[in-house]
Amino acid sequence: MKIKTLIVSTIAILGIGGLGYTTWYKNHFALNTKINNVSVANLTAKQAAKKLNQTANQRQIILKDKNLTKKIDVQTDLTISPQELKPLLKKSHTNKKLVVNASQTKQIDLATKNGTSQLITWVNQVNLNRKISKPETYKLKNNKLIKIKAQPGNYINVSALKKAINQKKDNISNLNITAEYLGENKVQAKKNQVAANNMKWALQHSLVYKINNHTYKLSPQKYLISGSLKNGGWQINHSKLTTTINKIINKNQTMHKAIKFKTHSGKVITTNTSAESNYGWTADATAETNSIINAWTSKKTTYKASHITGTGYLQAGTKLSDGNYVEVNLTTLYEYVYKNHKLIATIPVMSGLVNSETPTGLFHVLYKQSPSVLRGLNSNGTKYASKVNYWVPITEDGVGLHDSDWQPASVYGNPSARSNYHSHGCINNPPSKMPIIWKYTYTNMPVIIY
Image (cartoon, rainbow, N blue to C red; front, side, top):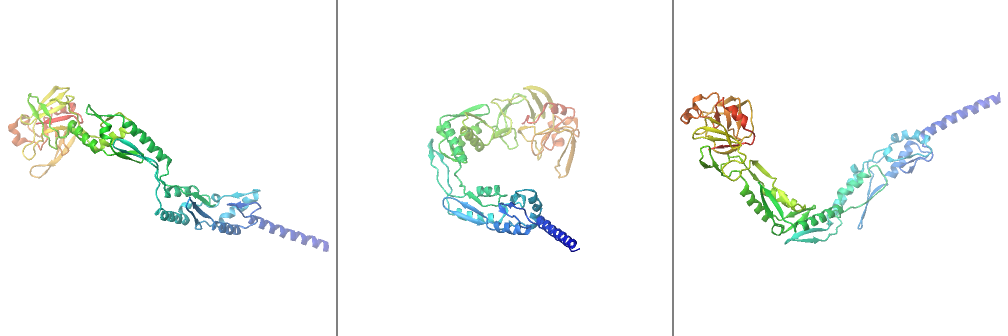
């Protein structure tokens, strides 16, 4: 009986002991378990978290250069909770040796931590008494290239420092970051060298400027006189060149410039230069100058004008360049359509009168629309909305060519009827003839009115 009781008691003790060991086993890390290179063998999740956090509070960001060593403690928001470690308990007993990195437990983004903010603030203060280093560069003086030696400095590149910290955001071991300096940039130095070589080439070559089928030879001795490098590009004193380009543009441009024109009747007239005369082109002299210098210092021998605004190129002589245009004689009230310098149609029209005169000058077709509704004000101030089948505007303020079925047939080509049947400034065409205008006109086609 005593033996049986002893056996039962022993089994009970072993059972309780086994149960206790199992419970302890499940709640303690196995041997050889390390988290962030810290041993947590035989520790509970709570004990392991405490040990890890104590170690974390000792970690630092270290900034070093030749003249300083700065340590910033990183203690904020790096704590690891027991709940985060519990899932690793079971895993530690299935692996003979478990090494867990911080990224497997808690993501640490140093770029958002107070420690990093403290470091950047300190660096900005240090930079107040530091010099920015500069790479070897060049300047242009009296048509000669002069080398400027590199200037040493110790200014800390804050952007590079932030980038370095961010790249190590998942590693909460000590960060040993060597400071980088602004200006000590091999890429920038190489760009400066390339720019210098290009300028050496440019100083030995002229550049041909092409505009409106004309060419002008630009001499480096006359225009590449002085300047400096900035971000690998040349900034040239281009006052002389701009003056020359302005003269070339003014000589060639046609915007608001009077031209001689031989009319249908054979009479030669001179167009006006009003702002309404919108057929023509000009160029931006400053933009052209900058582009010429960029082309020149990129080892190019020619540059074609590209900063052009406006519509239409005119050749010397009395006819428009391609021979396609519409001509309107306000004295006789007749309209002439030309294609390839040949007369296609002669059409009687009606124009505007006092206070709503049809503008004279050289215009171009802005666009075409069919059908359309023309809106505006009558001479008495009332509004009108006229439906037309064809609308060919030539000015931004609403003057154009269109059909007008409200006009009596007798008024077209009849100047004596204009006092009673004039338009609001447009060229009114007979409905039966307007399809011809629509067929032969196109966007940017010139329209001359005199």
